[in-house]
Length: 637
Image (tube, rainbow, N blue to C red; front, side):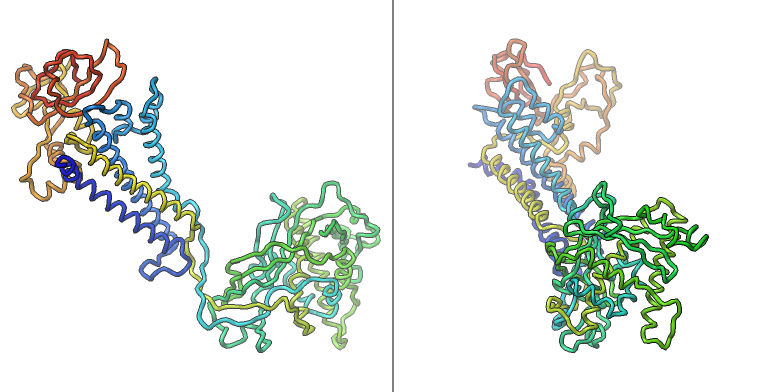
């Protein structure tokens, strides 16, 4: 019992280190949970910019990984000496080396290749797997981090509103002629709708992939949000003005996707295509056809040489033989929770997106009816006294914007399809975007637009998935508790354990006798010792600073010994000048049976029969007091 208590007492610093490591691991767990996992704002003293937050988490993780692995190594070191101290059984040499902190990972892996299998395989796998777990500790917390806005809701700042996009139906397309708003959208957003972050948000595609696939969600925008109580636009209300941000919950919108039509696709020009812009002295050729629930659209523009050269876009129709740009449009209804800036109506983020729903199928004819309204023939003269003159003027503007833009792209950038194709995407998407405005204008607001809006404060933070913290905590707690359990077992089982430091090279070579014969000659100075005669002396009268240094090194006096010594390799002249060995110095020996090692075991402590049984057939590695006479037939390591 006294021996066990002595083991616990001798390892008090290891125990202190174990509980400090566990405490730091638990502290890091709750810190990471507060600043990286929880979406609630952290306390003010923990609020750092996202980059610095990630840096502190990374430092914490690596410190914890280092401390825990050091504790695991210390516990394995204690365990190997405890098992080797069992005089009846000892410990296989392969296992002894596998558990040593001085054996590197490559060397541990090489021990698995020993010709005879044994328990060392278990220890090798355990050490390598624990080393891998410690490595995971250092990287897992930063392996799934994203930077995004987190929103804090303001109390008593919620309202019932109309928001999102109204259903796009055949009836809606027919109402286009009743609203000059459509012309406004085509003039204002014809070149920019899908690139304007007030109205569009890129999302993962449903059906397409690759560089030729474009996918967007149209949520409607903050400008369309209307208070259900007073019917006014939300941001016109004093209580909503000058707010930093608002969060609109689960409002309807449209997911639009554009990708090339099926290979070999061609339009039936007789039924799918039509010419537009003749009265506006433009030349547009647009084709629309159904492909299942999707729409395939394409267009061509009268080229520069015909338009300006001869002005015969509708008499020389050779430019209509080839469609310049073609795309497939897939659209689905979805609901989303969007955050909008109160300063400029831009979309800050998408917090939720529902599964797509197939909407009412619109035929190609419905789209053609809409195009005939958007690109309607116009009068050659504009009379401001005519009530419809604004419609004529805006329609003429749409013809000019489309025709001139496409014509310049074709002239200046032949073969560069992206800009005119993007213009086609915008042209097809605008009817979705203006749907809510048309219903507002007619006073018939669909019930599907009813939802809630909340004033929020955005915080830009680094956020990780909860599983990251769960894995980190599980590994850290497991390794810490396992190291404590092994250290406890080592104290229970251990016998006399060598007085060792954290410098295995000093521990080994300070017990190594001088080599004779082939050593180079060295000049002997008055204060010289053989390195083999260096010892680690216990000095209970050391000052506090020296004791602290001893705790850090694992053995008192070792840092002073290293600090005071200078290494010179050589055999002193004459050999008899070598000083007698210190009584506290141990020496290590190995014995071999019939010139071949059949099985090697390790144990420590003086063997009372060692001096008498020289050359005995015992395959055991000993550490024995240097005051004992060398047993016959044993060779020093």
